[in-house]
Length: 170
Image (cartoon, rainbow, N blue to C red; front, top):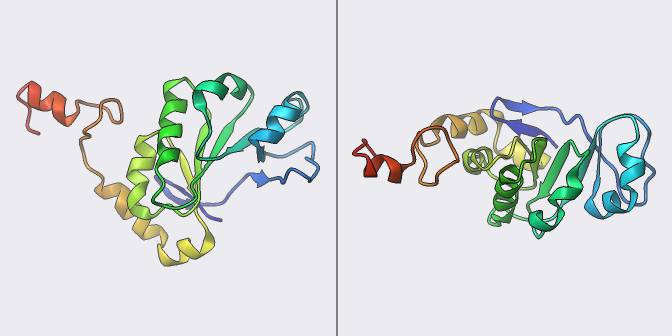
């Protein structure tokens, strides 16, 4: 599964570990949120960074305090038309999560600008999608993103509405 960033494709340096599989002491691993909650003391005390996989129904407000010691949150996107993961990423950033946020699933290249604007750092896409949408397409989508945003706080500078209220160009 390739990892997409604003700079293009790259390898995945994290291993996803199933709930029924033992976690090795070294290396960076991603475990389910359920497993992390049950084994937090052991997992955060091991060598290597820990990441947690959450679903599109993850309640950031309820669980953000439990993310201490977590270096990566991997948000599952069941399909490209499900935008709940974007909201989760934005809420994580708004509540101070400074680690890596990864979108996991069938996002398409045209969604990359929105993903990065919401606070997502990287996108793990299935191999078949990477074959259909090569790195050049993802880079082009990032390059073409709008210079301004309708929402406040997603980019530096004033939003479209702020620019209009001050007589700006938008």
